[in-house]
Length: 337
Image 1 (cartoon, one colour):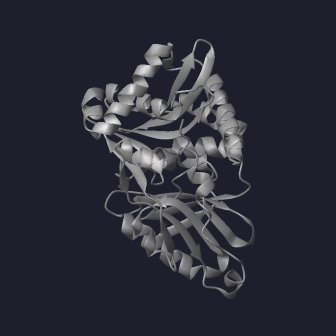
Image 2: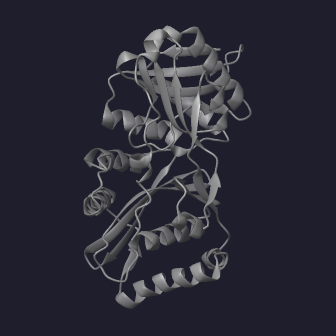
Image 3: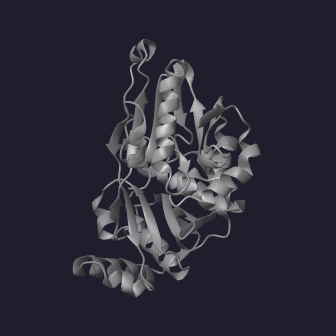
């Protein structure tokens, strides 16, 4: 059973958090904390709540939709969220997506397109679903950082240790900043400068994103993790992650590449991994995209997909629609030093 409601998102907090606790696939990007922060900062004009439930009233899936013009629907969180889809209770994911598909078929004249990101293969249960592979790289963590380095190839281990020694030789410091908002502002500034130097545009990394991430300092179900690379008062890089459950999710970074002989992006990633191991996390999620540096860090692809669905109505087919280009969204975290 599926229902589409124009409910206040704040009113479903208890229900949403309970479902998070019952979902093996829950991530920070489908959490109430993240979506509340996104709603507060980005202020979408129209949103609707998708609820799937059993006959006994038990909620099995929840989703937040942003409703655009001409019947275009998007799972909420764009353009700063790499996973946008249904939050489903464990073992009913396929049934929940299929129920949503049946509802969309029955109400085909109410919508034209639906877009999601980072969904599982279960989303193929939607009518005419188009799935494009967008795997996420995940690193399983050992009990110590030395063990982590030793598990890399001989060449990668040697290079990683060399990069970390360079920090000590030059008096650079990897530290957890005390002022989160200042550090996030530096992340956005450095990210913008790096993008401009490459003739790239990453408009999603702006003051709104800084405000959103800063608001998560007081989140209840996740923790904002920041690491700064600095020499004295000069910041050479900042990386932001999200601690959720037993996983640390690497989210975004900004680095200064003008200092010769440094690889600030990789050094920050190694620092984040070292912190994750020290804090007892079981894995690090490096985010979507298959890149060499992720493989060298130990990332193993985990299956995820971009999602695009078109309503079979005549009105819908008259609207030009394509799977959104992934390049901009997926470049958040491939910035290397």
